[in-house]
Image (cartoon, rainbow, N blue to C red; front, side, top):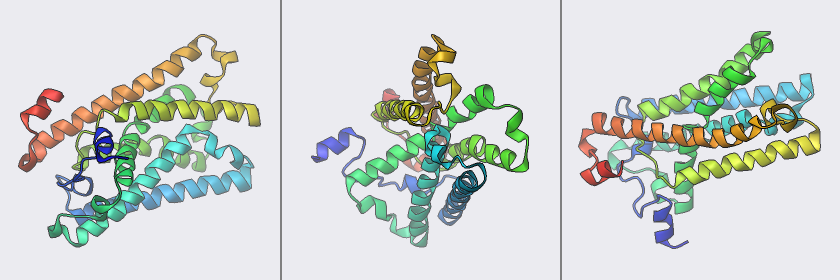
Length: 258
């Protein structure tokens, strides 16, 4: 792809000159790296534990990847591993003002940026949808279920807010919005493929036999919610950068774009 094409996708020729993806306005790089790696380990252990239990105890591991909760949690795990490694390498030589991703191909820079957008948007949908529509008596009926549900349906949003509030990552490109919607559309396909191949809907609110006309509201409402959360996160990042990153205040042209 031509360089202009990457620019349209929000990847400038000099990627992240300010090192915002590996720094924090409140934490030293080494501490930020340690927290990110810790979250990476925790999410990986959670995913492996849940998958192994479903394979050995409940014998329904084949449906593990049919749930948006698990897929978005895998995204969180992947992001914190990627950012943890990048931040660790930056923390070893913070005076160099560089880290490996800045020198990598534009496609990886774009994917890292988009991944950040997804892990700060989707969890903010997963958490309220679960606790409002899907939770029930079984949510806390055992120690394992309680731990699993807190990990994937509560801590997921805590991890997202950590990145939004405590990193220096700025407002992400508007072009990410259609990608957020396309990914959700792709998951809708996964949900109906699951019904066709395994005989069940991952979420009852996707069952047209149950929801009828309300199904359209859910299908339209969730992408709208993703867009709204993207806008909120973008605004919070802009305010944080204006208030706590004074050495790199946004020019008035960016203020007008907001």
